[in-house]
Amino acid sequence: MPEADYMNDAQLAFFRNRLEELERSLVQNADQTTEHLRETQFVPDPADRATIEEEHALELRTRDRERKLLKKVQQSLARIDSGEYGWCEETGEPIGIPRLLARPTATLSLEAQQRREMRQKLYGD
Image 1 (cartoon, helix red, strand yellow):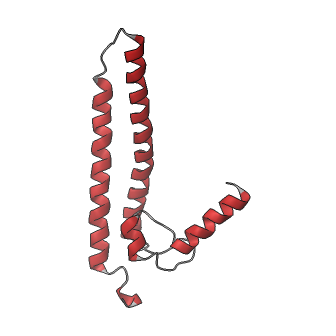
Image 2: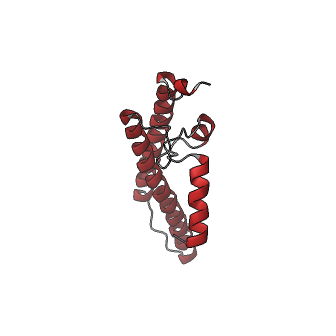
Image 3: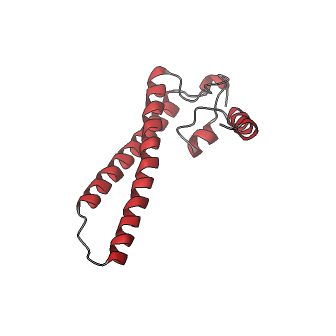
């Protein structure tokens, strides 16, 4: 596709819709987790109680990852509003439709992300 057609109105609308659906899903999961944790019953058996606590800890870790993803989704929606969505933060080049389809919250082109990961591997965080 010509570079002038990249991130046209139809593509931006598609990604906005996709990000908004993801945002709704993440918020709904968080609400379900809150309700699930409130429904905790007292179990006298220590083994059963430990199992329930481990399940809750796993669920909370999952929600923490989703909370971080929710922040990225909201930042991506803001980037759509500002006209920066789809463009690499580091190089200013197009991120690419295939990468955005796979990871709609991407802020770096594939090459820039690979360079960043290589630097982190060589020099640490």
